[in-house]
Length: 254
Image 1 (cartoon, helix red, strand yellow):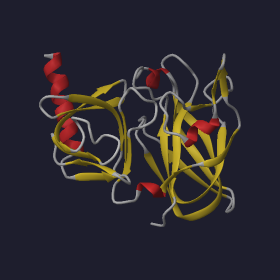
Image 2: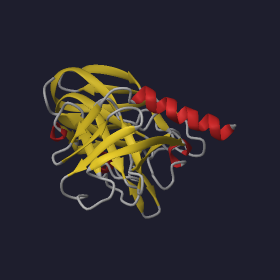
Image 3: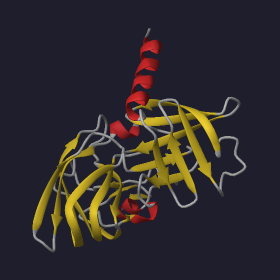
Image 4: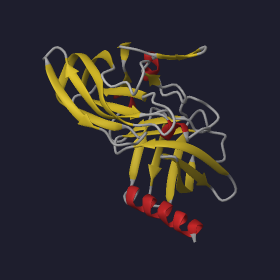
């Protein structure tokens, strides 16, 4: 019965999420969800020899510790991806590499979604020889979040960077394909404040407890420094450390 219910939940999630065609494009590849169970994956260069890419596929989405995994099949071969997805962005990891095998945007050029640069943080966590640096916010690498480095949950800790943007995309948590339980074991931002330093204006956002990209609309095309401050968190089940996986910004005008 439990297995049946879990299968039904996966099917319902798929149907609700992909009831219409959704196409995410990168420069030489695309991923298109055709309906609740079929999709098309194209990669003109890196995976041209693969049994999975460059064809129509069946797919199923499962969940483990708030992380979702996409399993695709052509009838003879299967491949499993960690999937981070919103209406605007799709990121896929094949589980063997820390960098994504696909990053695309829907109805936008993926080149417009840029990594933040010249980032500063009020603190960083160092554990033995490993530093959870603020520079990690500029990557999509797995197991490489920025983690604040003060006692407690990091309330009041912040990062800052300069942008030319109409919105940000915020990726919460410690994300690992090999150890998905680390997402819930560590804390995640629940409420944040964005300060538009050039305008002396504060914006407040309540975040979902999700590793998927969350769009933070600035409300205008803004040029200048942005300060992101942690105001509240979803507490980790084991660790107090608050983790942010990545931050991107939309360079295009909307």
